[in-house]
Image 1: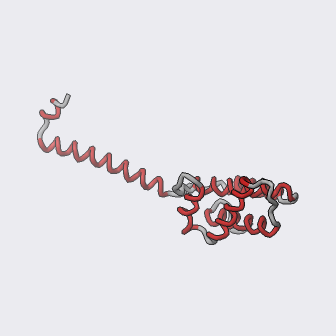
Image 2 (image 1 turned 135 degrees about the horizontal axis):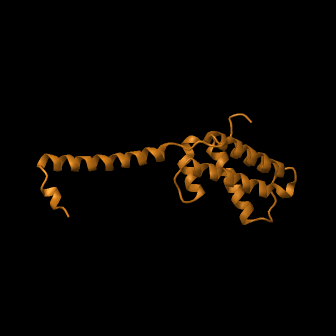
Image 3 (image 1 turned 90 degrees about the horizontal axis):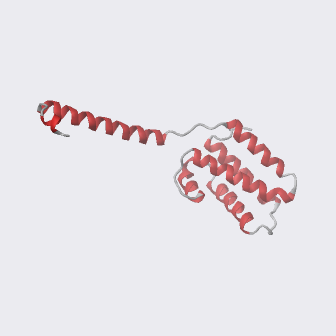
Length: 149
């Protein structure tokens, strides 16, 4: 099968090998560059979802659901921006340089997790507000929501 290659001149063989290497290296670098390019957000979609979860906040019994939806929306944004990590916490760590208030994001994420783990425990109004403000700012930082809403 490689007999035809032996019949070619040395220069032609070298040209073929160099050409194959160039194709492989180009594909490799294109793949790396593609992963680095952040995906653009459909801000309208994120705004609609954000407004829906804000409506849930009118009734106290819906606060845990609103918080969990905000957490999921933020995680979707992290995934869309291709931050690395198998779990959301790992993705938040990967995104820390992009986020203007890491403490608020961690507070919000941890509160959302507590609502799943301890659904009977009530949430304070100041905590839900603080968490939703943290998620909203994080979504703005990532570009999922416009800077001013």
